[in-house]
Each structure stands twice: as structure tokens, then as C-alpha cells.
Amino acid sequence: MVTAPTPARTDSLSAPLAALLPWVAGGVALAFRLPFCVSTPQDPDGVRFVRALLRYDLVQGHPHPPGYPLFIALGSAVHRLGPSPAWSLSLISALALSALIILFTRWCIPRVGPSAAAQAAALLMLVPLSTTLSARPLSDMLGAAIGWWALLSATRPAADARRTAALSALVLLVRASTFALCAPALILALGRDRRHRVVAVAVFALITVLGYLPVIIVTGLGCFLRLVFHHGTGHFQRFGGTVITQPDLVARSRAFLWTLWTHCLGGGWADRPTHLLAAGAIVTATSLVGLTALLRGADTPVRTSRLVAGSALFYAAWAYFGQNILWSPRHLLPILPALAWCFGVGVSALSRRWSRAAPAVVLVALVSLAHESFRLARTQRDAPPPTSSLALWLSHHTDAAHTVIATAQLGPWIRALIPAARVIDIQDAHDLSRLRLTATDTLFVTSEVHGVSFVRGHVRARFVRDRYVNPALYDIAIIEVAPLVYGCR
Image (cartoon, rainbow, N blue to C red; front, side, top):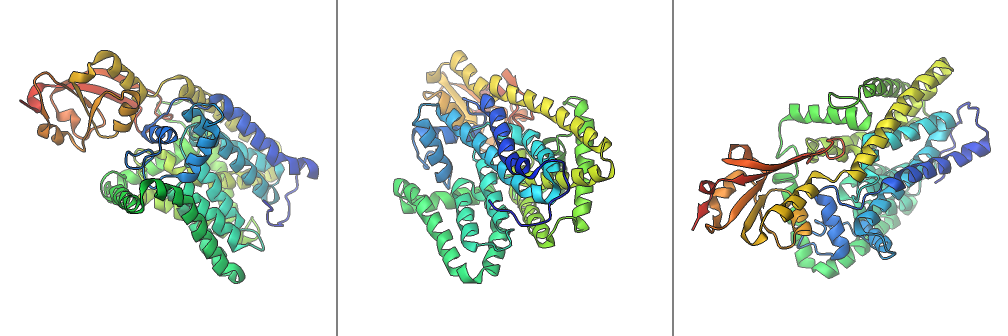
């Protein structure tokens, strides 16, 4: 992608090396991620994607609506070459991070200089969200990469609305929620490029329709629309963790800030290595210096800064109000490049003022983050997720013919690993009273069911993993419920 012709910062790297830097950074990112791509799904959404590669069926939630057709198509293409479904999708995520690093570094070099751009790219690669999601079978990383490609295409001096429209449509085929990131850029591009406005809208509509056409053919138009509507209303009214279902703004704000500090800036917490406290403080302070410089017009042209900042803020607002930020930090992944951009500007500003001390201090922080990144990557690759361990325990310690498993979120996971299991999806522990089981049945409930702590029963097994690898389901128990809790006949 061609960047805006802004004045390059003074830097010790020669022009040829600076031109090569984005590709080196992308190659390093890919080489770092490939050994850590996982062959086991890490969460319920990952299970849905894996099962979609084996048998695409929106009715069964493989994957859930709207269907992620481009992500599944790319994963299927890799899977046909031999790798397992989970590893195939993980590879797509690793390649997406590499592409994002190349795009981001190339865009940053004219604005902050090669050295600062390289350090910003390193931050983007090493923070916990990038570490985990770039080696996991989820569409988040690919959606972020294409979303930023669409956004940055609108920052070109002679932006072509057709390009921005095409890339924005691809975002809808990968991860629809990330469209909030590039929507402002698309609107601006359509407003500026009057010559190609009609064609751009047609391109956007055509790519979107053609992308979802195979899904509609397989599912049926009426069924597809019902599933999308049902899932959309459910996201906002039942299970999506939005401000409608979780209206406590204090809790949402605390979760948002905690995610920024720990997952996006790499800061330490009570259950993390102590050295991350210093690393997070350095990264945060440097980013604030960069943000201050940007507010003073350090990046030229100012319109570019406003577009990127406005788009990132618009997405952040969407994540705050419309996504499950209480339990899923991954929803903040698309704002990471904006934070890395502020960090790069801060590195450039501090290096000009303290040419020796500033780079050394920043390097210490990045080394600290690299150490933690390797730890998280190894944990994700080598330690089984609690959901997988729970399903394995059930397969070894229960009789499927006489066991009923009630769960709120783990149904797809358990059914995938134990096809013979009798799984009942419930919303709340009160639903247990409506079950009608035989006297020979044994009822187990998973601990993520709301209100299960008030149910009489005892914990049969518990599975815990690093919560920075599995933020939502890092501690899961399987509870055997006393017979009197539910109706027997």
C-alpha cells in the first residue's frame, strides 16, 4: 500500500533499509507465530469455526451467523492441503498479523521514522491480545488486518472510494463487528471521491452479496435471514454482553480500562510477573507523550490523524456499548494499531529529546513484553484449555447414556468432543427445575451457568488456566447436582 507523502523523520537507517523494514517486521511476526499456532480450539467460538470446516451448517451454529464466509473459505483452502482444521484457521490468523504488521509499519515510517516504526510494530506484535489471537482459530486478527487496510486506504492523498469500499465489504465477510472501525473511513471516502461514489457503493454491495451468496444457497434465504435476525437480537438482548444486557457502566468502564492496561499495553497485575508493572508504565507513558504530540499536530497532514483517531474512537465506543467487554478483551483488538501509533510517535518524540536514554528505556519495556509474550504463547499451545479438559474428564468419568450435562456456553464444545453426550442448553440455574429426568440419570452443570453457586451440589472437577490466555473461561468446574434440585420421574 502506498502511504501519504509526508516528510520522513530523521533516522539513521538508509532509504533502502527503511523500504525493506516493513517486510522484515512482517516476516519476524510470522516466524514468531508459526511455532505457536494451536491445533486445538481454545474457546466456544473456535469450536464453531473448526466444525464449520468439517461441515458448514449455520442452523447448528457451525459457525454462528452471519457465517464468516471469507474466513471459513480461507481456512478450508489451507485445510485441504492437509493441516488440521484448528491449525489451518490459526495459520490464517498468523498470516493476518504479519500482513497487519507490514501495513502498519509501512504507514508509520514516513510519520515517525524507521526506528520508531519498528518499535511500534514490535509493541503491536508482543502485547497479550496480539500474542494469543494471532495463533488462534478465530476471525478477530484477519478482521482487524482488513479493517485497518480499509481505514488506511482512505488516508491516501488521492483516496479511491472504490478501494475503501471493496476492503470494507471484505471486513463484513470476515468479522462484521469490525466494520465499525472502517465505517467512518468509508463514509469519508464516499464524500471525498464524488467521481467514483456510485461505483464504490455498487462494488461494496456486489462483494457483500457475492460473499454471502454461497452461505444463502447452503442455508436458504429465509432461514439465513431468520438466523441472522435471531442472532442479532440475541446479541443485544440476551447473550451479547452489551450495555443492554450488562448496563452497569462502572463495571464496564473498569473492565475496559483493565483490558487496555493488561491486554493492550502489557501492564502488570496481581497475577502477572512484577516486571510488567514497569513495562506497562513505560509503554503507557510513551503512548501518552505520543498522543500529546498528535494533539499538537505532530503528524502531518492533520486530516490523516483525525481520520485514524476518529475511526479508532468510534470503534472503541462500539466495543464499549455493543460488545462483551466484561469477559472478552479480544473485542478491543482493532484499536491496538492506534495505540501502537501513539507509542511510535512518543518514541520518536522522546528519542529526539533524549537520544540515548529514551531508546534504552523503551527497549527494556519491549524485552519485558517479549518475555511475557513467549510465556503466553507457550501456555496457549501446550496447556489444554479448561473447556477441553472438562470435556475429556466427562468422557472418562461419566456414562453418556445416563448422564445429562446442563450448560450455558459450552454446548458446541462438549458436543464436538463427545458426540454421544446428552447436552442441554440453559440460560439460568432456575431452568434446572424444569428438567424431567429419569431416576437413573445423573445431572452435571457447568460452572459458567448463571446462579449455579446457589444450587445444591458438589464440585467433581475443576480446571484452571492463565486468564490472559482464556479471559472468559479460564476457571471452569463441573458440578454434580443433587437429585432434589430437578424433577425425576
